[in-house]
Amino acid sequence: MLLGGAITVSNAQSKINVVTSAVPFLRVTPDARSGGMGDVGIATTPDANANFANIARTPFATSKVGIGVNYVPWLRDLSVNDVYMMSLAGYYKLDETQAISASFRYFSLGNIQFTDGLGNNLNTYKPREFSFDLGYSRKLTKKLSLGIALRYIHSNLANGTYNGQTYKAGSSVAGDLHVYHHGIKESGSGLNWGLTLSNLGSKISYSSDATQKDYIPANLGLGIAYTKVFNESNKITFGLDVNKLLVPTPPSITGVSSTDSLALVKYRGRSVVSSWMKSFGDAPGKFNEEMQEISLAVGAEYWYNNQFAFRAGYFYENPNKGNRKYFTVGAGLRYSMFGINFAYLFPSGSGVSRNPLSNTWRFGLVFNMDGKK
Image 1 (cartoon, rainbow, N blue to C red):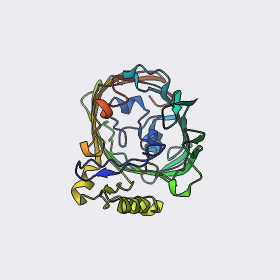
Image 2: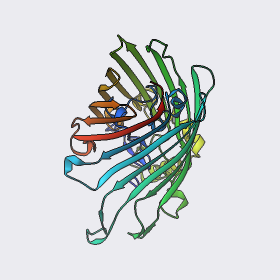
Image 3: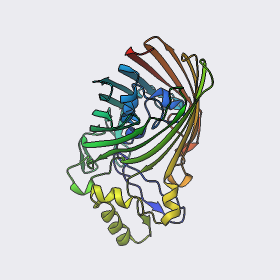
């Protein structure tokens, strides 16, 4: 594995062939509301954190201004206190048809001790990553909207020379294209759907070696969400998100050094656009393996009096493609212009497959200003 967790190769006998990328923090859901619903968020009703899942939802928000702040602790199962993610997001509606948005994500990896090949201590370093994006969204019709965003990504995992290799901070620029259909009727019930293309951008490099550039987590997502209003006090939403990384599948190991080296060079040498296209049909196991690269998230959200929310969800990833499987629960409280959300991820996995968010609470604050009652 290279710095940043970008490349792995599979063993044909084990059938485990995980599609990986650099800056994986961009795949983590910072929003505590979505976190309580199994990371569902592409087609749910709009809020201040729409930037992280589908920015095209924003023009349908009922508030003119929305701000969201989230905190996600990391590796709390291991009693680690200095690894965390913080995010800030917000939007401003220019009028009833268009809005501008911005968001910032910061991921601290704590304090890490570097060693040489013999295990001798070299020095300590505090790796950190962040992304900042600006977006614009607009209604195309009364029910359909489009959103675009540009993102700057900075990843500083190491600095200096280690084992003969000089490392530096990496950076990349990416864009998003989002579509959202708002099917909620005047009664409050209805079906929403959304389509997202996220992190479409340049490769990232942590060294001066041009052959060591890594893919960022470009992603295709499709989501639906159905809301049922029972009466003035009770309503429930069910959501489903389907995601697939637009990153090439790593080559399988043949055991022949020259063959494996050529395959890795070819894998790294693909252009960015070509990698997106070929990610739909380059798996060694053909169609069956391509289907395994699709992850699913299902979730539900119940509101009482539009003040108290209870949430639950489940996330599934194939065992050969990462094996992330977990249940989540969450709750929310809304009072006037202020809202607070909590999410909890139940312990899941073991050993190397242990989820870093196992047994972890996520927290979020939302501020809605100048909204309609």
